[in-house]
Length: 218
Image (cartoon, rainbow, N blue to C red; front, side, top):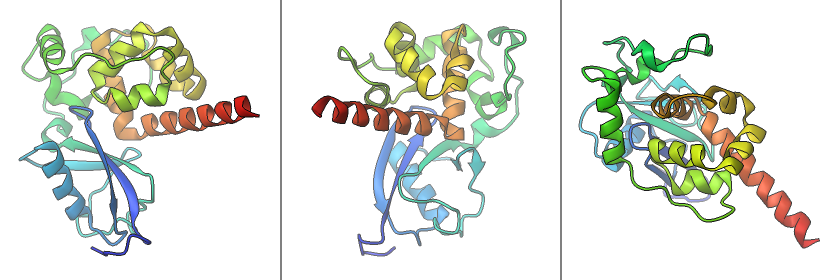
């Protein structure tokens, strides 16, 4: 890796399982294999991990970040390869009929395989920390302070102003989450983490609040 910070880019790795994220500078010449090693070390994963940028699998381990199209500020989703195998069909009871949208449930089959919805909900509630919140919290801050998908979605469901802001910045995602059960909404949220939809909504939220703050100062 290059030691020159002038050419480094900042990349954020996020675990689709826990929501944990870490940002750090890397040389554009860093390989995907090296980034995989970072992900395993950061998230304590021993098995195989797959990396996704905007929903696209980064499949060539020898490719550099630059060659893979990874640029400064990109968010890379790290997911257990086991969870990406379509080894078990998703439970149909948790998905409302006619909800539409792309079915990425096979990417998260490990979450539901060999367990019932109730068991999964119990496990998530035990692992997920309590939401972090202050009055007037913006969407970008809510995501940053609540990286665990279950924690954030629980907060989103309980705060109308966060739902309104999400609808403003990413109406497609807001519609997908609307009227869903908590566990189905968490599944959708993780799906969007892989696809890069969360990063876009957070960036839009950050820009919006910066602009609003500047207007108030004028």
